[in-house]
Image 1 (cartoon, helix red, strand yellow):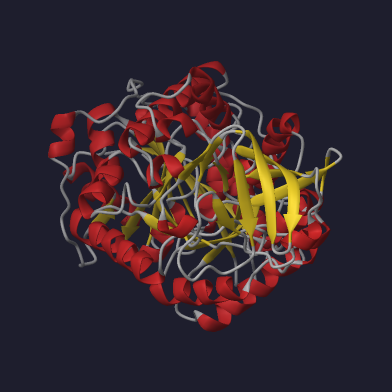
Image 2 (tube, rainbow, N blue to C red):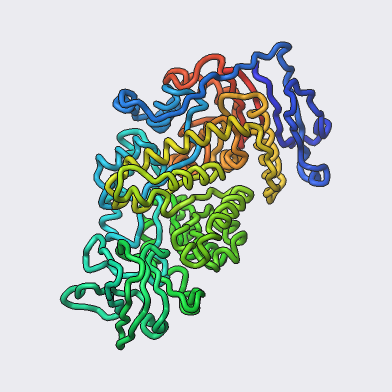
Length: 585
């Protein structure tokens, strides 16, 4: 029998008593309601159905993690659905649930940057099978036509093979960066070599050991003796001579030069940033790329070198005006001193944040990066915004088939911090082993998540209230209570029925031990939820009648072998605010 707490707003002129506190048979459920001072709006009633005298509590024994078996990968299937009695779920997730059960599903989401090593249809499908939740396109590289083809291939993969891969477009930003290396995919700078950084345009191709710089005032701003860092310090040069528009530099730390890499320069141990601070956050090229992303229907737009919340607010207003029938979320990239100074305001204004550690490490001391990463992750979780940890997670796997042990430890720390997502950059875009790099992220995530649940399965959730309205306050309390009940009762899954995705994100914020099945009616919301920790997004047509929704869901999921009779679930909804606890019939 279902045991439920139903909250609803009464419109009757003679409402029932304001609070009728139920006597719950569940220990430590800590169900709380908003304080009475907020009850000057429509009265709220709480009702409890009669509990079963001997409630049957089913605890799953599924605990094994791991990668999908080859046989199961070969049998990934998708049934094209369009009628109201069908359900859409990612094919890889379905296979994981069937093979390993609820508790084995990966909670941390994975993002792959698409480039020459991963842009073909078969390569994209291999990444989707390997667990890619979001495909990132970087507007620093390639043409819009090339990116359009990648977007179309991902969309086709979703439609034909049953994935729910979202698309993130990353803008270039207006910070100082290198040019395209004359068409080469990379160049090696050796120790002691002399390279020329120039703002000149060359008609007949770049001379040897010459690099174009995007900022016209570059030669004027740098001084002899300055230290020039490429891509956050992956290569270092010392300025030894200035000749008109050309700057001669000595390579002091050798490394690989990549097209459009970011440039910063230091003087007397301090970052020279006056000119950078004057550059606009969104360049004229970025605005054209944003128009392109809106037209192509990308799910996320990541903005580089965000300096203030005003930039995010302006962009969101622009998107709202240009994309009336589309849902595009804005991700703020935290990669500068200005971003850190205005961190909380920026995150509040955005729909999520990315810890871009490469460029961030070029502007602050290296030893400060780990603590700033943890701070950003914590602030995002407190404010209920998804957070991505990015840059150099598995940098060595651009060239080698296995990561360093230090890289594995770095990945595990990001997972332990409960970041929503991890992102591959060069590893998947231009590396030799994109699928292996993704497999490392996936296996480490599953292992560390399992360890975390075993060690701290009843983690204290010290999360501040973030509701801006009475209705949101109720939703927040319901999700906090549902997550606590899920941990205390060791339920197999939480079901959430949400049209906007808001209650699903509130549950994700609580980081419960069990997976969260998020049922939504639109494809765009389903893809957007694929970025958030612990959510398994489904597309399903549902009504305001929870009993009908649950019976329909149980029937569809049991028919596909994803749940079974006896599984214990908690169900919540943003249409009829309620908590229900039940065994699958």
